[in-house]
Image (cartoon, rainbow, N blue to C red; front, side, top):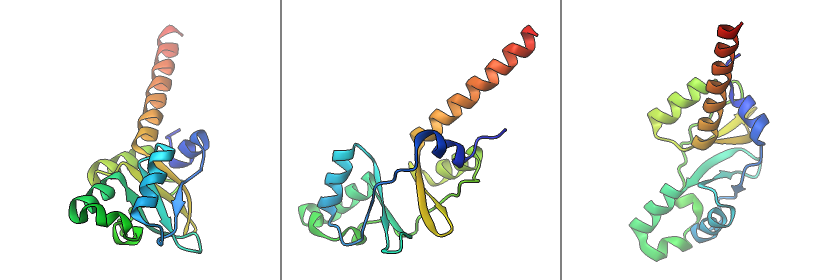
Length: 144
């Protein structure tokens, strides 16, 4: 059975660090550092995805505005046009989207609501498990 985003979320959990668009860049940078994560999802009051703020966005803000950029609202530095996936997205589709767009994090959305986030590390782990399972099946077939 092909691996899907749902399988990955079931294995890793569905916790997502999200922030409101009013947080400052400095506050979000602290959240990234404290939680040892590379991205936060910016959500609206209704829990809808409004944007994503990643380490790359932080670098862009600081490069453009220097230390002054840290006091700006996250909404001024976030990526607003967020590529999303759904739980029924296959691992292969996800790898294609991440490779083509050069994304390291993709939020998962169902029914217009944020339900998880997938990182490139999650994808690599899932693919390794998939290859290991295929290898075991081949070895059993050859031995059997």
